[in-house]
Length: 66
Ligand SMILES: [Zn+2]
Image (tube, rainbow, N blue to C red):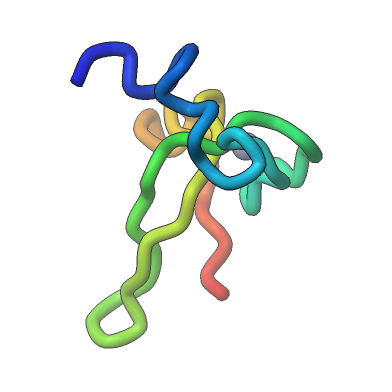
């Protein structure tokens, strides 16, 4: 699916894809990107915002371990 993070596609998500990003703690931002956190059994997926996704990818931000 193209444009999975824009337009009509995100209207159907809870809160229209918006919420508080667990990494930068900005409120009512679009959190559309899945990121795995933790090791082994504690591994889980969280939803983070676009800028944090990019920052994590480049090693500029660390994820919350909770
Ligand atoms: Zn963020």
